[in-house]
Image (cartoon, rainbow, N blue to C red; front, side, top):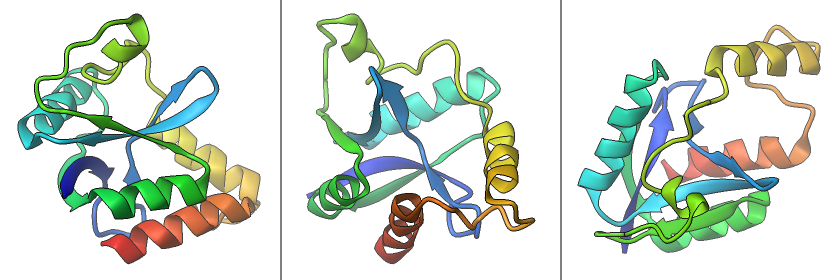
Length: 135
C-alpha cells in the first residue's frame, strides 16, 4: 500500500525526509491521502520552509526503514481528526521549525568535513543509504 512522504531536494545528493521531533522522538509522517500530504507541504511553504516534494512510497518499506533508523513512522489516515495537541502536529506543522540550512551547515561543521552528506553518526548514515535505496 503506498503512502505519501515529504522529501526535500528529492533525487539530489542533499535529499532528506521531513520529520518532526515529538517528545524526544523523531517522527516521519506517512500520509494515506496525497492531498493531505500536499496540504501539509503547503503549510510548510507558508512558514518559509523549503518546499518538499510529495512522493509515494510503499508503506511497509517506509515503516521498516524508519524502524531500522530508530525513527517512529506515524500513519496519517485520510480524514484524520486530531484528538490531542500532539495529534494536531500530524495535520499541521508546528509554528517553529528547524531551519534546514542551519541544520545542513551544523551537520557539516560537526562532521569536520566540507561534504554535508557525510555524517559521523552511523545510524544517520545508514538511514540516508536506506532512503536512497527506496528511491
